Length: 175
Image (cartoon, rainbow, N blue to C red; front, side, top):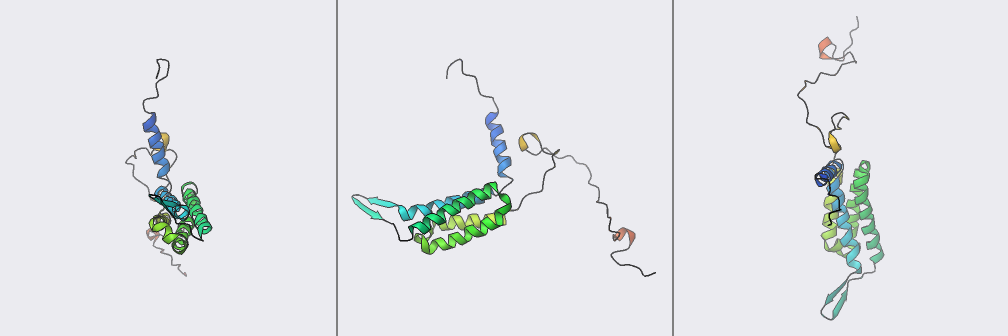
């Protein structure tokens, strides 16, 4: 680093970290990560060659293409959980089904490692639900929510005419 190199902004790392945390909190991040991590051993082990001294053990199976397809699909589902959060239920169910199919096709689901990661990630994708939507004015700097004020919340207006306040309760009088 020379004397002419400009110094980095002092809070840039903290700001980027807060931006990432805000982005991560609005989607099933861990579900997508587990599904993607589950896809790698499923597609790797059928093509791997284990070296033990001078002995090479090939674990290639006749279902190598099927394992590759399942692994790639799991990685794509993990990415879609990150960037297309509205398809989380579909992606979660598809990840679970692909993990189950990987047991007979891909060396017991990537020696159970890929199977378990994909199952857990798929279940997390199905179970994830978006938090309450933040209003634009409540959003603070860099997408981090601002502290809430202690204002009383007013009751919503009842336009149906059937509230307990007017003693109608959904019943209509005949006269």
